[in-house]
Length: 171
Image 1 (spheres, rainbow, N blue to C red):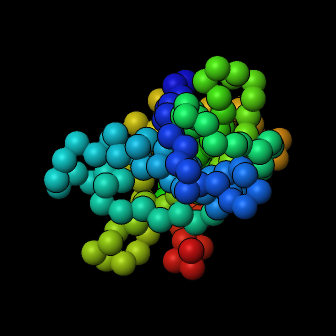
Image 2 (cartoon, one colour):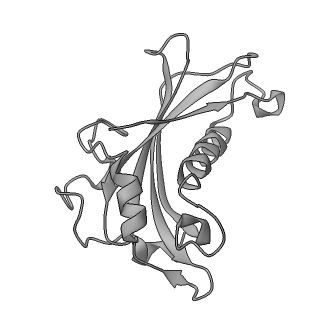
Image 3 (cartoon, rainbow, N blue to C red):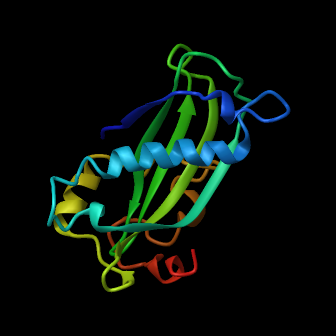
């Protein structure tokens, strides 16, 4: 199982009045890492991959320690914890390169592939599933000590038809 590593620079504007990275900014870090991860699959125009559209159905974030501004980037590790017919769950850890055991954030995101032209969720293609399986680690903790984040008991084999896409339209 592979992990996607994204080195995220800290910006002075990321700081809040308390001198550390604001909680909302961590969502941006996760977004940057997720886009970098998912768009590696997109080989170009006309591809039926995630580049055609996706929506976030859910975020879950556990803040572990404050992160103050410095000149070195943090590393956002991403991996897949669940693959359903029309959604996937990505887990993350934001940590230091130098001190790998210092985790600032553990998080997970439910992503739903979305057909922008049709205006509705769509199924994960075989090409996408093949890519995602390289990053699947369904035993590793995503958030709150739960193996698959918020809904870890719905589909133990991570390949079934349980579907988070219905809620994606509200997201």
